[in-house]
View 1: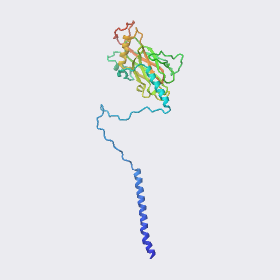
View 2 (view 1 turned 30 degrees about the horizontal axis):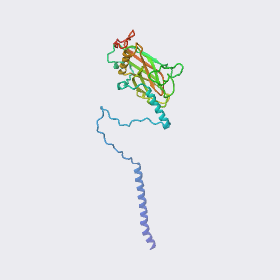
View 3 (view 1 turned 45 degrees about the vertical axis):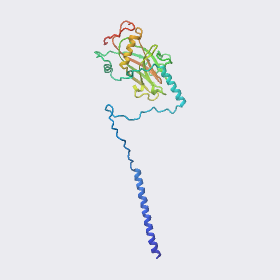
View 4 (view 1 turned 180 degrees about the horizontal axis):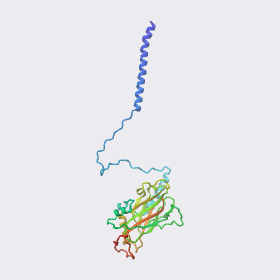
Length: 300
């Protein structure tokens, strides 16, 4: 009798334990499946606004310059104050946005035909003006001297290394009606704050006239690159800048003493700066100040 009673009581208990074990196993399997199951992606509402000029609108956030953690707040404040002082020493930026437009083209002939409004029967040969020795930044402070202009603080020499020191050098240009100017410069990144460095072309004088400027990064997308990297940059001055230089030559300069000031700021070394100046026929005799600009003919 006792055995039968024990059997009747034990069977339900065993069945209950089995069902509990099976239930726990099913629950654990469901949890594992939920972990491996991909989560649903929240769909953003579709922007029904039409694209601008037929192009989709780029909504990517603007990349900001990463902060250099190696600088303390005091060092950063000192560097920014020095940067502002250097910028004040340079000629004022031109107001006309056209003077900042940069024209890049690998073919000088096709670029000239785009820049000059009148048809050119013959492409003139440029007058090449090279400032500095093309020597790969071999600095000799006794010979690599500049002829400073347009800035009040001390300029760096050609090939001179170091940071926080602007470059300025004056070159003589032809006394003729200029059709176009192509510029070329070779510079080396000296580090620190070189990412915001600029290049300038100005007319020297008591009131220095800035006829063109641009951030180096707008001319060369690889700028600044690693410290010590060398960049050779070429660009054309826009027509508005060339017109301003012609007004200076024929309305402001004394006789045929015509110059341009080549400047840059301020954390890079300058190996050389070269100008390719395309002219009409130059006057053969000195001209009086204020005389009209000669039309000239294209030189062969």
